[in-house]
Image (cartoon, rainbow, N blue to C red; front, side, top):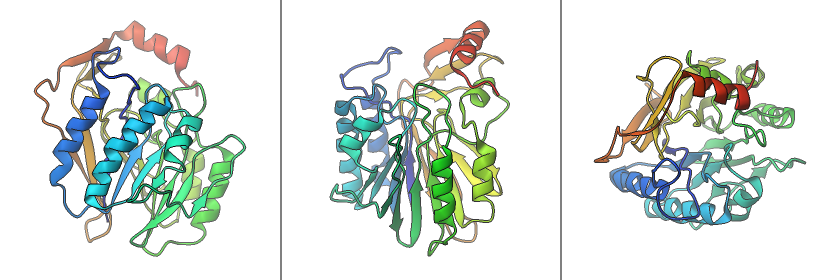
Amino acid sequence: MRILHLSDTHIERTAGPNRHGVDATESLRLMLGELRHQRGVDAIMVTGDVADDGAVESYTIARELIGEFAAQLGVPLFFTVGNHDDRAAFGKVLGSGHLAVDGSDRATTVLSSAEGEKAAVSVVRGYRFITMDSQVPGQVYGGLSDAQLDWLNDLLRTTGERGTIVAFHHPPIAMDVDTQRAFGLRNPRSLAEVLRGSDVRAVLTGHFHLQLFGLLAAVPVWVGPAVVDRIDLTARPDTERAVRGAAASVIDIGGAAGPLFHTLHARDPRAHETVYELDEDQVLEVIETRGWVR
């Protein structure tokens, strides 16, 4: 099983540079252009913040661009909800988030949630794909509701033919970085209890705008890089710097050495240019006003 993993496209309804001077749609076009030579791909996964503004028009752009690319490869396409996304607009354009090659909804199971959470199940070549919704409305940090965790636990009581891939937006792992700890998944221990001893082969996430690997209950967790820009951890401690540079991942599940994770970078003549930079006081203010206090 080979998965192309995209995350954090942050598409906006209006063309042109965003407030930081980056044209998110052009970043996506550039990344897809670089991915055109990939072979043996079985599925494409997009782990949230599909739209920056939550507009129907933005999801339409993402569906058209990534959907056309997926159709060219002849593979299904999966989307999850991020903190920037709007569930209603997401559902209007992307349905369950599980799209067949012809664009129809291919989900075999969909979570019924009073809050409208977007979670669904599909099977590709014997692998079960479970997408979940880690959005906490109005917040930057994420969480998986008890309803979703119970639903996932029930699903995992039955093993998939070749194993399961779980995907959502907010990482359940973090480095010793204040913003990661403040804005990641707020209940990783609850998720770990559900994953422990299951057939989950990998958990795919995004949100941090950088690549990161770790384990949760012995399950591999991959934080995919962003398409729109990259957080540069060579910045001074307690500050944050974003730079230009679209990236994606290719993930091989199965095989003697699997899972394997690799980052693919777009060739951007402006790569590494600073997009924005926050000093210590600005980072602290963002964490205090928008972060999760443990």
